[in-house]
Image 1 (cartoon, helix red, strand yellow):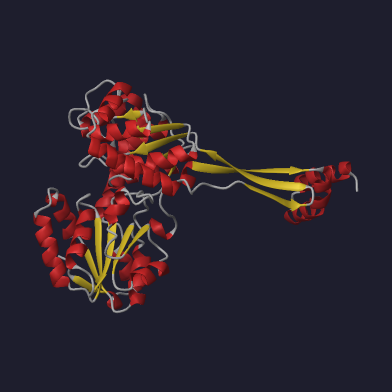
Image 2 (cartoon, helix red, strand yellow):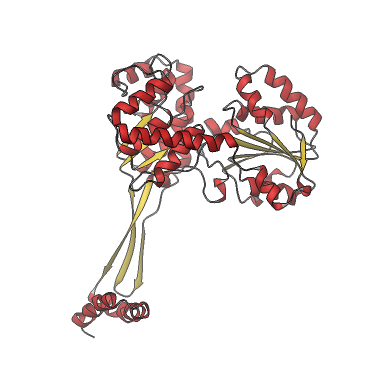
Length: 431
């Protein structure tokens, strides 16, 4: 476990291959597509069939009754309710500073160009709950959606074996004021939201992390003609811990295992800058033995990657190549290194900032890009639940001023109809 790979000995192709998707993720793509197409062809009957097959769901309806949500919220332990409200408050505080601003610019005398911001109409939020009910994910998705002003928020949650939704997830939904919760998960839930199958609404955009099948289903439906948009590739989970000789081995081990316990397919990477690997291995073994989810974590750790580097520049090269979802700096130069990173979902700086803080209550969103998608996008924001529309309004003076440029450019492109539409207005406006 954690046998070091010398970065300086890898060619560019080898470095890229080191962080390529696992074969199991490729296999998940085919399975997810089969499920999505099955639901598209078979409608509600197919959706229920897959729910029975994968979730053991036997009820007639997926939607959770409102009284069940209210009862779960009322029954919540006071300390748990306080913790949830504190997390909701921190996430609200960070996200309230976000959102697309409206813009008004007079680009030509007499022509005003504007940009207005509108919320997305209907969104689907996927909340993982297969082996661990991620109450925190509901908060991270619902809060920015509400701040953005989304009209309809539909939440899908994999049910427990008895067909119910985890009581903590329902309680959090009650605290957030959400009432449209569906007990369905997996690729079949994504398909239901993509096509508006049965009770599920047709979502304009689907959000949320999930396992390999959920991530693959989201990617597939977003490519279909007329399919929904998606937030980003989110899942399985990833962590990269950068450690040097100053790093506390227990902290390093804890941060590695915190992600490993999510999913057997979780990607766990240690980047060593003269770190004490023997001490870290021992700490991992000791802490792993006490984890309730040690079987899952052990599978992820068995495939963990350890990269040995000789300089800060090499550390940054590893990071930018991998573009990790979560990046933790346990180094003496953490602040300086963090500022130089270009590709990462979220960065945790220094020994007192575990990724767990970001998962629950620090404020920034924990729904982040995986699979090296951080090279091109960031995590979920209020803006992700909004869209912009541009407006232009010209007076007669504006038409006269812009016309020569428009007509000339239209002629360059050979589009006489474009030129004529502008020329007609110029002539009517007078010179």
